[in-house]
Every structure is written in structure tokens, then in C-alpha cells.
Amino acid sequence: MKILVGITGASGSPYALSFLKLIKRLGHESEVIISRAAEKVLPLETGLSAERLQNFTSRLYREEDIAAPPASGSAGYQAMVVIPCTMGTLAAIATGLAKNLITRAADVMLKERRPLILVVRETPLNQIHLKNMLAAAEAGAIIYPAMPAFYHRPQTLEEVVDFFAARVADFLGLEVENLKRWRGLK
Ligand SMILES: Cc1cc2nc3c(=O)[nH]c(=O)nc-3n(C[C@H](O)[C@H](O)[C@H](O)COP(=O)(O)O)c2cc1C
Image 1: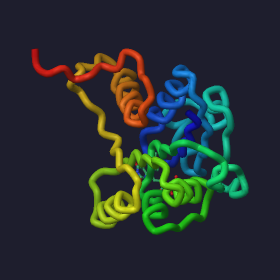
Image 2: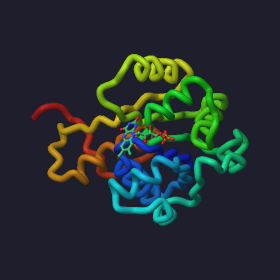
Image 3: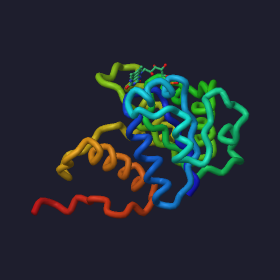
Image 4: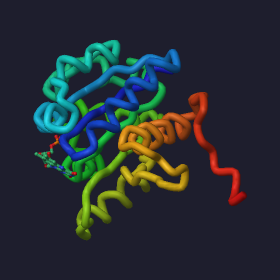
């Protein structure tokens, strides 16, 4: 699978890193578009510069690379995941404001009827956020909030992050080895 990954400037960039590493380990391909804001948040939260993402993905685009392949439906990505997704990028996607490469690529995924997953992150949510989520969902996006689970009893923060990223990959239909599935209470 060739997956397009948008990284925006919401808290939660460790999820993006974990997701990219998983996609690579599973033998799939990713390409990344990073927003200007994410270029600031990523080093803050992970200690990595945007350039270092090149170790985990085939291609790295900036949000202003508006003529890059993700801007066209003919580029052939099977799915797009915006992880994490800010309320600003959500708003742009929900209203069709395709002003940078991330929001244009998301717009393309919706018009091509391909999966678009938005890992939204904000708290608390105002009415505008909630309305934009509904509008994006009605247009075909999947709202996949960055809400970690604890029922698998994670022992480290890394396990919390990795489990969430693995659930996103599982949702896309990728075969994730050792995913701890709920089997009911013993
Ligand atoms: C440390 C940090 C954390 C942030 N966390 C969030 C967040 O969780 N959700 C959000 O919607 N915006 C968050 N923001 C604000 C966005 O980065 C800001 O609105 C930015 O303009 C979004 O641009 P983008 O959507 O192009 O990445 C955060 C900003 C900083 C500096």
C-alpha cells in the first residue's frame, strides 16, 4: 500500500513517528507532507527535526510544495492519514479550503473517494471544531480522534503511542503483527 501521511502542528507528533515506523516495518510505502507548524512541534515532542523523517518515509514534502504529486488524484495514493490533525487543518478540509499541500491532498482524497483519516487532537472542543468534524465526516472523512486506550495495560508511554498507531494501521486494513485484540474479560 502507498499511504500519504500529513503531519500538522497539533500535539501528538509521536503518533506520526510511530505510524511511519510501523508502515515501513510492515513493508508498505509512505510519503509525508509536513506543515510549517508541525516543523516546530515535532522537534519539541520527539527531539527529531523534520529532515530526520526522511529515514522513515520515501518522500518528504513541505506544505507549500503545491505542485508535488499529492496535489493530483492521478498520483495513486491508496489512503491518506493526517496524524495528528489540528483544528485549523480540519477546518480547511471541512470547507474545501485547499490552500496548502496537506489540505489540497485531503481534498483530492475526498473527491477520489479514497480513505481519508483525520487523527484530530484538541481539548476541550468548541462548537466550531464539532461542526467541522461533522462536515468532514459527511464529506467522507473518517474522524479518528487521538484518544489512547488503556485496556491492554500499557506499561510505558511508548506502548500507549504504538498501540494507537497500530490501531490506525489496522483500521486501514494492514496486517499488524502482535496487535493486542480485545478478547473479552477473562
Ligand atoms: C506545542 C503546540 C501544540 C499545539 N497543539 C495543538 C493541538 O493539539 N491541536 C490544535 O488544533 N492545534 C494545536 N496547536 C496550534 C497549531 O499548531 C496552530 O493552530 C497551527 O497554525 C496549525 O497549523 P497546521 O494545521 O497547518 O499545522 C499547537 C501549537 C503548538 C506550538
